[in-house]
Length: 116
Image 1: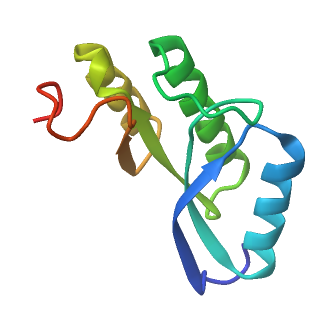
Image 2 (image 1 turned 180 degrees about the vertical axis):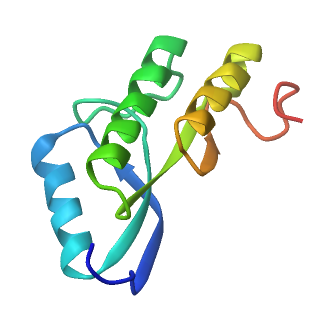
């Protein structure tokens, strides 16, 4: 991105579909918009209660976009609080890889004992 972004989209979801994700990236470039992105499923799916392998795959897609589009995509790590210490490990892995934010998956309500 040759110029500083004019806009920041703080809540963007990558879909894991080349056409849709490519359209989103073109729009962001055209409008000098930085994306804070996460992935909630692959192949256009939306996973409500993903297992640890699915969570890691979603975060891997976001990390890939961050690496391919530095300055345009800032990654937010998705974690499923139902995964306990595994969620904390995934959060640490994503932070070490350069992600700047965390999103709790909607698999548990904010009042659930694993969240509070």
